[in-house]
Length: 233
Ligand SMILES: [Zn+2]
Image (cartoon, rainbow, N blue to C red; front, side, top):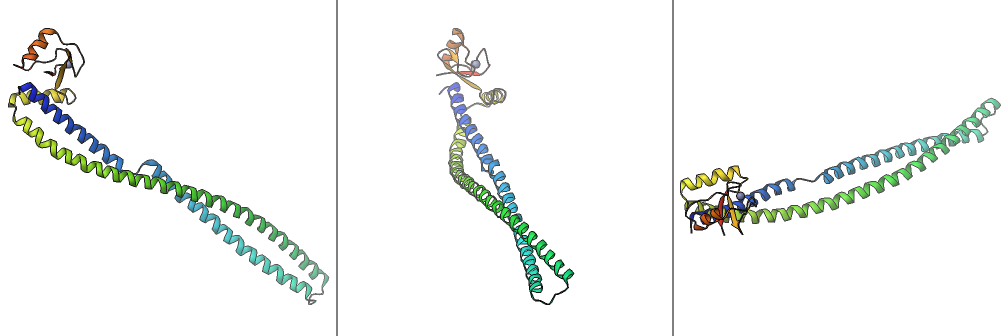
């Protein structure tokens, strides 16, 4: 193989290595939990808190209802026991019983309203949790796929790295220096395949005399447009 063919082969291996490295890096970022899961978890937690708050409120109302009911019952017992005969005291007991009755109806209305809210909050929490669970399962499956892909890419890298080393060992130091410098300046691509009279890297038509020179493979011929080394196919 001529020097330019060796260089083209080296570039092919190194481009494959660069693709492997780029995908491995991308995979690292895909392992992280996506925003919808983080958001969903926070929302689920918030909805659970709201549900618990309402349940606590309901328990408070129920305790108060019991207390008011007991108080009204003991008042009524006194009222109908015959022990109280003073008309002013009787009137006051009746007024108190009426006030307690109003309070009881108020409490019962509030309890009913709260129970409806608890039902809605429970439903919202249930839905958010189910959605979160499905997102988490999806992400776990994705992580497993990524894990497999990562292992395959590591194998690919282990196969390509010695190939690149071997390709490099075939080339002279000065040639490699020129190749590496071009590679660094030209977006990782030092070689342009010469295909149907055009540079495969920049796409510009190459003059016939340059094509002829490149075809001879006697020296490294740069593309007049982008400066990469032309590799005739
Ligand atoms: Zn070019």
